[in-house]
Length: 100
Image 1 (spheres, rainbow, N blue to C red):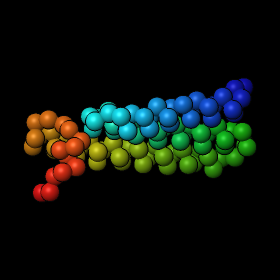
Image 2: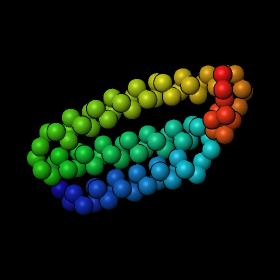
Image 3: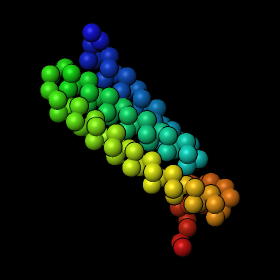
């Protein structure tokens, strides 16, 4: 069995990579994928602690995270496609300045 410290360390590394991707990159698709990586890192940490403590609440929380991430994907991609359809390019700085 893999020690819980290693799994939590992997989750921390994945979360850090996702956070750096959100802060550094300006492409909304890359930022979106980085945010999804952060969601998955949180779910991995919940599952690791649930397995360590022999409790199912972490598994349930991971399912809620996956469901929330799926809803985020649907809405986020719809927004990204709409912005690209109207502007014919994706730039976060221009998107944040939109008024109408």
